Each structure stands twice: as C-alpha cells, then as structure tokens.
Image 1 (spheres, helix red, strand yellow):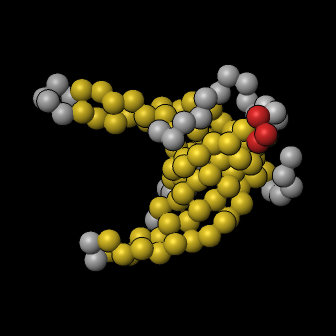
Image 2 (image 1 turned 90 degrees about the vertical axis):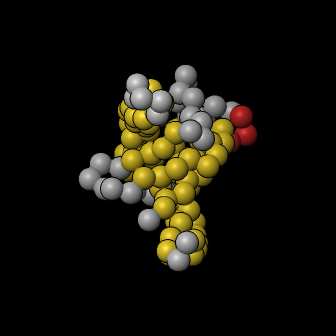
Length: 108
C-alpha cells in the first residue's frame, strides 16, 4: 500500500430521472466510503469563456474492493468540502486485485 495520511472519500454515482416535463434531473447517490491516500500530481489553469478554471489532478490509492465497480461516470466527494473529484480512470494495478490507482480531476 502507498504510504501517507489516509483520508476517506465517498464514492457517488448519478442516476438520471425524468422530471415529467420532458427534461431530466441528475441525482447523486452514495455507493461506498473508501479510505486511501490522495496524492497531488499537477495543476492546470485554463481560460474558457473568459473565466479562469483551475484543474487539479490527483491519484487516489486504495486497496482493491471485490465487487465494487468504479466507472468514469462516478465522482468522489469529501466530507466537509464542496469540491468534487471526477474519476478519469481506475486502474487495477497489474490486474492482481490488490491495489487500485484512481486518476482524479478536481475542478474549482
């Protein structure tokens, strides 16, 4: 396992429901609380539509959870913080079912 301070992130998955008027609503539901090590990789500042956006990239290292399917439609949230972490890629290291490295992007 990777060394460092362990934090708990909440894995959330969205479902799309009809609002009855021809539109749809995205609702987030909690899937699991996962403990691991969050490591900062780099920051990328972009300007879109005359608005600066800071994209922070992270790796989240955690033990493999049997039966837990993490997809790019999922996001992580952290208790007490408003920032969310979008999942870019979840990698089962060496396909050994021991360690997961999850690439994340945090947009502020």
